[in-house]
Length: 123
Image 1: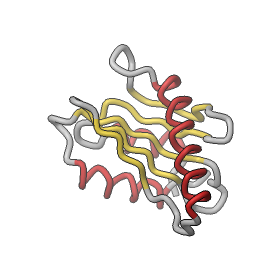
Image 2 (image 1 turned 90 degrees about the vertical axis):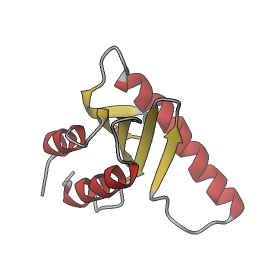
Image 3 (image 1 turned 90 degrees about the horizontal axis):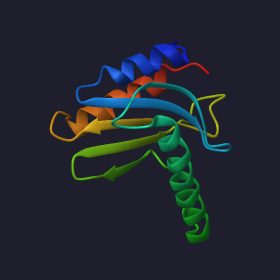
């Protein structure tokens, strides 16, 4: 089992990664971040993506969709922003956030690696 710091380091090692964060979407606070900088303010991204997650959860409830969200993808001109809701024991209300450079990343591989990181993360 990996802790938050180890998991974020693994996420940052994904090809094309700009930055990563573990976020509590009940509060909008980042519990840990790695990378980012001038290119991406991860604390702002964590708070903003909290609104995205809350909106999607609310919409699914209104539609009566009983499935769980695996991940949410936001595609920009030069970046992918991947939000993976955590389902492991003790991680309710948390998501992993990964920003990727579109020209250096393999989106399918990044999703696969983020799923693996989630499985190994121990909160």
